[in-house]
Length: 331
Image 1 (spheres, helix red, strand yellow):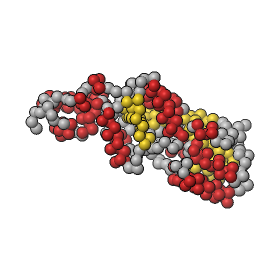
Image 2 (image 1 turned 60 degrees about the vertical axis):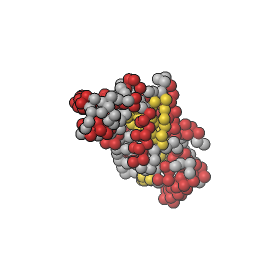
Image 3 (image 1 turned 45 degrees about the vertical axis):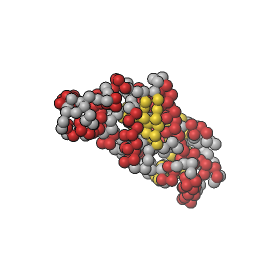
Image 4 (image 1 turned 135 degrees about the horizontal axis):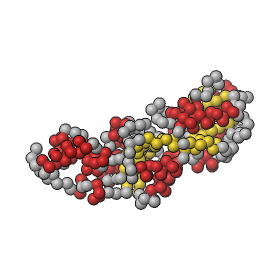
């Protein structure tokens, strides 16, 4: 290759026999690379007499306080409340945010993140489940995930197992006779799966169902209402006259379940006890405020924002708390 100040990032990657994303990290976040890799790139740049333009200048010359936030969607109360808390925590540090709701495919999400990285963000806060650890490690900016699978990056997860366990303990203590966990979908690789495990580990010997309906992913759509109507009707066919203990994967699903109980003249909490998850604002706005496992969303947001100041690939577990409201008996 000719020595040329106009060589581009792909030329550098090819000359070093490394990936384009690794070279991008050298220019954007060199601290994320090993000393050996940095020296290798520096030596090749000298050989090529490379002179960077603005887009590849040293980070301190163009550092921004822009943070990307990639979410699955903004329908669940957890995601909207977390975005609100991130913005509040970021005000103290002069941060600005670009929120992006992911598409249907990993390819689409990666392309969007790469395009947004052209704005030279300080980092990325990732809540979408589409990317695996290898995909995340290849991104050219520091990544902090919230409630997502592990890898060589910073992770903030709630104590999901304890949250599910607390829900089971209360429903058992309150002498429920039939138990169910209602969810819109899950992966055993997601940290949130541990809330199912925490709940089900106390269900041995109990009458129990795990109910999964994908339609509940869009809780404000008619399809979600219809799915929950069918769930409650099915439970009535099987367990009418028994006391139900219901644990929902989030407060939106719990609100839908409560609504159908009211329409079917089921008494809350005498005949049905309901526990949601997240303790999001919607749990307070339900007709009967919903008992919920509270993720400490403000703390998770502050940890994420502060994480870019002293970035360290590690996992932080945030404690949960069961907040008693009107949908359970609280003896």
